[in-house]
Length: 157
Picture (spheres, rainbow, N blue to C red):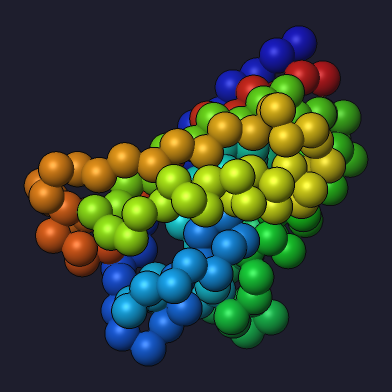
């Protein structure tokens, strides 16, 4: 049995924060604001996986009111989600993602992101896709106010 889930996340860009996407520290003058490391790409993937398995969402599993998750690497959260869905009898078939950011350029970091994500999920890198786009200077991502990510996950049982 195959199941599909969709995930979305967006965070505001602010000064004095690291920019972490797909578990990669990206040199940039701003970072994403959030309780954890605010990795929108991984948060979208977590929600896609949890949605595909009908196991809730990232906010329920890792509430921002819980101090254990303050500043935590989202790769740790993804590893936890992978273990939870595996315990429920699911395995990841593939993940497809898109990150929208006007800047910085993300393409040079996409392969390392794929490697990090595949390792955290316990799958082959060929099962993970990371794409980046701009919004042609439209909306909050186009103005440089934030970064958004979408993910689709297919799992099988």
